[in-house]
Image (cartoon, rainbow, N blue to C red; front, side):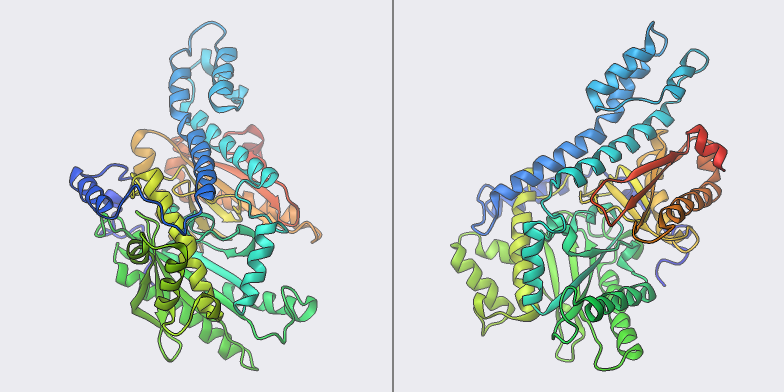
Amino acid sequence: MPLRGLAKSKNFTLGPTAPMKTFTENIHKQTNNFNNRVNTHKTHNLTDVLQNEKLYQYESQIKDNFDNIVPTLKEIARIQHHDNFINTAQSIAKNNLSIDLPLHILDKSWVKPIDMRALYAWCSFKQHEKLSDDFFEKDPLDGASGGKSAKEFEKFMLDCGIHLLDITPCSDGRLAHSVAYVMRIPFSAVRRRSHAGALFDIENTVNRWVKTEHKRYRESNPNEAHKDTRYLKVVTYHFSSVDPLHQGCAAHGSDDQLAAKEGSKKLLAFREAVENSFCCGASVDLMLIGLDTDTDSLKIHLTTSDGNIDLEKTISTLDIYNSTINFTKEEAEKEISQIIDRKSSKNQLTGINKFIFKLIVNNISQIDYVRKFHKGSYKDIGHAERFIGVGIGFKEVHLRNLTYFAHLDTVEEGAPDLDVGVKIFKGLNVSKDLPIPVVIRFDYSGKVPGAKERAIKDCYRVNNAISIRYKNLVDQGLLHTCLTIRDRDNIHSAHIIGMSFDKKLEEAH
């Protein structure tokens, strides 16, 4: 397995991948020259301009909230020994970050230097709390369950012969926006589980397939069991067009071919597991997608005649964008249809081809999004995440380079994912004497007796395991945790049950 021992390997180094927020002028120049050749100032006729504006406003607001933490704390650090320090510090935090600071940390400022690492972690955790509140209360991405967008997409998927869409992107923060932004899919209409290298757990995925089919048999949800539809499993690996040798997937050593190959292996193994374990022609549909983390364009792998994934033949949305930039909407749609199936028009596409068409059209909007708001290629071509998310949940996180995901039930089984995340943040934060903020999350079903209590215990169990595994960082105040739970059956935000510098949490240990 490619991930085994990855984070401890002597030959493995994130090097410029962590954090690599800056890069050479030559790369900038090459990117700008490329953008100039393809009419940077022209908008594609298939682009949803209004949606792009709305998405950018949301992205800017959330990231600014996190990026204002350091300047705010610097301002507070300068007045530590001034009269009325606590009230002034609270006023600064309220004005700049719209949050209150913890009194039990500020109260010690007259005795010893204020614990700025703890304040940094606190601010990060409170900004995540604000993000969660806003996401579930206001539905800023217009993707909540039961909403118009979600209902329309679910109906569309059934028309494509797909009753559930299950996507595994890499846990790299540069793919956290792959559903809501890159593919423009309502978040509630897709099952998303992130894993390092996009190497999902086959047994767990088979169990989720079983639950899906059981609901179809028992509840006819999302459709009746006898309907001729499939469970579509998608793996999204990633690569870098700007710096392919260093900024690809760390889990695969920035080897794009290896990332695609290992993703394909997982998909085929999942299908084989379903077919070998269940009778009556049980099977699933598969799709392998490559995401360029610099431009947000996609490479959609085609299938071979025997139903396997072709690692060589792909449909490039960036190539389609460039070749149809001067086409009318109707001409562009016709061209895309013929690229997918030479014999079909937009209205004649069926099944998975119909889904691919929508994916391409949606991604064209995202390519224009990056071109307009990020000059064709993101500045942070490497990691620039703000916190690590650990556990099960985080439905509210859909922004690029905001969160590194470590989807796990236990630290032991999720160690490869978590170790990679910690190593990334050693470059991003620890190298600057800033702590690694880790948000632990366990969603639960409020319909199940005792589920909330078990979720709370899971949080403390994982928190304890993290404090043991990364004891050196924890002892230096260079890793802090925030424990959160959320009832997935209700539309509400995550609830904080404790933090690593909270007295109650320390006593609970």
